[in-house]
Image (tube, rainbow, N blue to C red; front, side, top):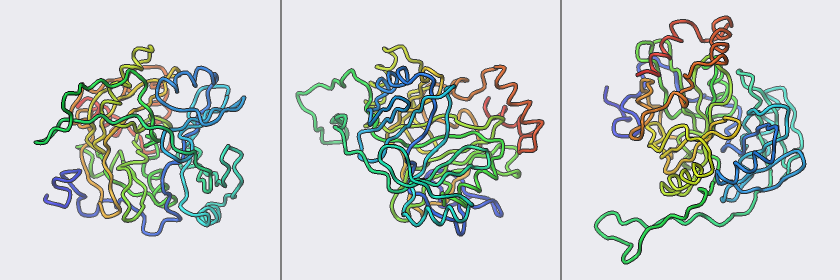
Length: 371
C-alpha cells in the first residue's frame, strides 16, 4: 500500500488498527542514553579491550572503570568490579530536573544523589523484563577529546584530493559516543509499552513475523522524542526471544575508514569479529560487530539515520537477510542461534513461563532467522 514510508525508511506503514509507535501522554521524554553499566571480574582485562576498541578512560577507582568517547558528555560505559561478567542496565538522560521528580512520583521511586564521578541525581527503576533502568540529570560532562581525522574523499564531479594518497592510521577507531543498546525480552509488548509510556520514546521501525503479523510486531527500533531536533533512528531496540537481557551495544566512530581500520586493529590484537563490515537496513548504519573477552557483543558504527518526531513507524517482515543492505551473510553468532545448553535452557524456561513466547511464536522466530 502506498504511504509516506515509500522511499523513506520502510516500504510499508501500519495496517488499519495496528498498534501506534508512541504514547499519547508519557510520564517524561528522555533525551538520550547517558551510559551503560556492566560488571566485570577483571577490570584490567576490561580496560585493555576498551583501549583496543577505541574508548578513552574518563576515570578509574579500585572498583570501577569509567569509559568515554571523544565528544563532550558523560561517560559512555561504567564497568564495576563484580562476581561475574554481565550487563547491569542502561542509564538514560532526563531533559530537565523536574522530570526526575515527575518520574519518581509516577513510579513510586526516589530521587537520589549519584555517587559516580560527575554527580547528578538519579531515579532507579526496573522495566517489565526485570532489567534495572536508571534516569539521570545534572551529571557533569567530560570535555571534548581530539577527534579521529575524517579522510577527504574524491567523490562527485569535483575531486578534493590531488597529489595526495589515502592512508588511514593503523590505530583503534576512536569511539565518539554511545549510540544504542539492543535488548531481548520474553515480554515484548509490555516492555515496549513501558519504554513508550514511562520514558516517552517513539518507534522508528517495527519488524513482524511474515506469517504472524496479526499477532503484532516482534521487534521495535526506538528513538528519543526530541521534537523537531533529530535523534538517532534507534537509541534502544527490543526484540522478542526466549532470553531476557543484553544483546549488544553500539558506539559511533568517525566514518567508514574508522570502522574498517579499527576492525583491522582489533583483529591484529586477537579479538573476534562477530559480523561485518556491512550496512544495516533499519537505521542504515555501517556496522562491524566484535566480542569482548567476556563474549559480550559490541558494535562500531558510522553514518546512521536521524529522525525528528514527525516520522511515523515503518513496518517490515523480520528476516536474517533483511538485516543488511550489503555485507557478508549474517552469522549464527550474531543471531544467537548457535546451539548451546544456555539457549536450550532459555527456550525451556520461556515455554514454561507466562510470557509472549509459545511454540508458534518460537517456530516463527526460527524460520525468520533462516530466511
